[in-house]
Amino acid sequence: MRLATPLEVDTASPLGGAHPLAKLGSAAALMLALFITVDAVTAAVVLAALVASFPLTGLRPAAFLRRVAPLASAAAAIAVINALFAADARGVIAGIAVALRLIGIAVAGLLAVLTIDPTDLADALVQHVRAPPRFVVGALAAWRLAPIFGQEWQTLAMARRARGIEAERGLADRLSSFQPLTFALLVGAIRRATRLALAMDARGFGRRPCRTIARARPFDGRDRAILAGGIAIAAGASLFSMALGTWRPLLAP
Image 1 (tube, rainbow, N blue to C red):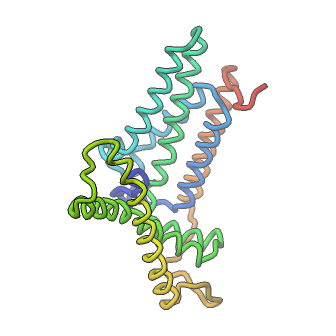
Image 2 (image 1 turned 45 degrees about the vertical axis):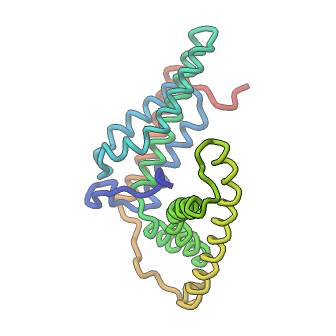
């Protein structure tokens, strides 16, 4: 959950204050371009474009690097493993390409997710995509409550230790306590969800014909430019790789 929690963003920045759907659409285009190919050139071009556009996001570099570090480390480990077990230089290049693709997909997704406020995204889905308000508001409420599960897990674990049920001194103790803790957390989540659903229905959060948008937001020229920019970078990176003769589709025979 920490990876998907929005960071402090400068909303006055060109990308930080952009429409949520524009950022998601642009990121989806870049991620699709990296997913359908297995060459290193396309991934390198997309990753370079993402790095160049980072100052426009309004994010703090240190905070973003802390979020992307686990994913980058995993991608680097995959590249190293491929290089160690490669029979020739082609295997090493393939490992580097996989690492660049994974890092590019992770960075594109995180730049979009971490700069979007969940409430703004819910409003945008209802207003522009015509998503069912009841489902969207319910998903937003669940997303807001998700970080509480981690705190409740710690509370339940400390309560069990205080009662002398488990000491959790070793791996075996932690594994044995997983099932009862999970069951207790599930029961608490169901009770909380039931109370929340009743409270939301009582406050008129259900689907109504007269529902209006309190924070209506148009899809303006800047948002169209961001969406077009993401598509252009994805297409340009693929065409550049094709011109060099390195582009290889993922499902090539």
